[in-house]
Image (cartoon, rainbow, N blue to C red; front, side, top):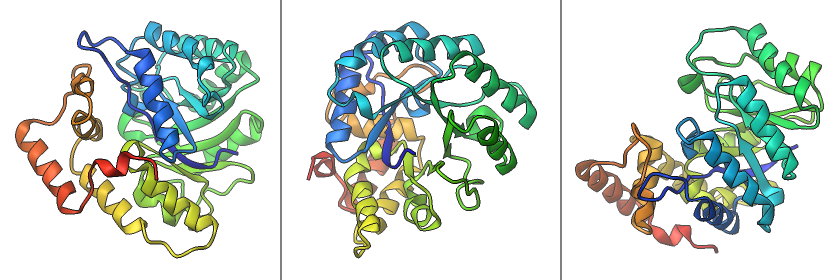
Length: 292
């Protein structure tokens, strides 16, 4: 099982909008040092649909050098079946077998088509651990409980979890030795109480220390004193595009975070002022990015 606090890490681009692979890896390593149990590269937060396949391969080829390599999950972020398979094979050749895989976007389909999609992947790559990515807002498809259970029944060794960003699964999906990870800090404590394994979220890029404290105190049955602030910060980010908000926040530390692939963009001056003022009003700033 996959348990704990995971960040869908940001991708760092240079001024030419090319992926800065070394800086992206270093940034991800810092997130682990700041409390994350692990990292997902090329989730939606990492601009996965916009970054080229070649750049993803370049980064994956560098990952084995990292001291945190055992804590990395590879998001494919691809619609093409063959591209998904090829990227996963390259990741496997570099020692990585955990993947976050979303069904293809754009086309309309149903549960049996989704099962066929994952079947085709697993037919080619039997030695893998796949976390299903449930995010109807992006893919146009929402996993049903029945579909997830059927996938686990057919592929018990490969389908090991789900990231639930549509929030129709985490309260009622119960499968032994299967990780259910909501996609928001707002669901962290409630999810843990319901038997979820943790979270995979965008905003743990900046809330990792708070989220880890909530997780650890739940495990130790200690009194919670960070959850209210954690949820408050997430609710502020939720008022804006998450990627825009995160890059705007991080650009105060490093100008490279102003670089986003179109059509994405950082917040405009008015949005930025409202956003940062509200965070400041609730005493959330860069000290929360430093390891405790």
